[in-house]
Image 1 (cartoon, rainbow over the protein chains, first blue to last red):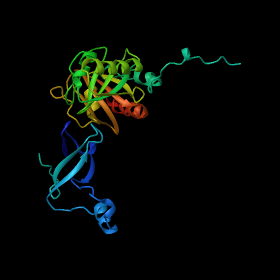
Image 2: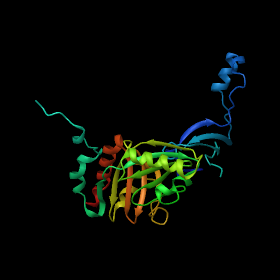
Image 3: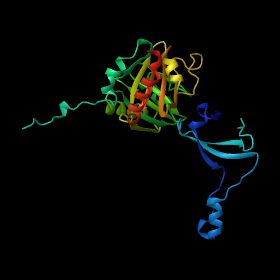
Image 4: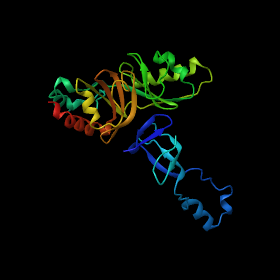
Length: 80
Length: 195
């Protein structure tokens, strides 16, 4: 099983982590002005690149902190 | 009529108090012991220096614990520590942590919560203690990377634990009380091959 580097605890086994989806999805500046379609796009639609992907991870079984990691979705390798 | 229950007759019990008989069947090479009650207090602060006086040592960095016999500090996260003490009662430890935070550095912000009931403590010792842990724990437990003073919040079997290295072949495992029976059963099973 692969190791993921937690910025606080160091490398730990993958099962200790929880995946949190794409990183950097900004909350709408004026949510009340959004149409249903825009709102659905904000809630559900995410990038799905082949290659580098910035994503949120939580060290759920360790320090319980969230961090942003860059992973290659084709090779599953983490940068850093 | 039954005699009324007074508060003097109520004593804290551990989640593994009834397991001593089964633990005693193990050989000395994997000695298991349900330790007496430890008071535990969760501290979150950006000013860990404020608590040095109480712990008697600088608060630990990543994957480590520090402290003396009276109070031990275990690092749980970048701004979070677990203080444990087998001698102080939970309210005393909580009050001591609050007082230390307030006194050492005026203006230091320290959040203190009593979590004594959350975890129970198991001691694992003996020549095969590391072999038993390694059957269900992914971190490197070799003494060169996990010796005395090391600590890790990790998984042992399927249970989340705080693992402390006390010395060669000597470990303390802090496990959530509701997972304690599972972990005890798991440890007994893992230790079977060393009987």
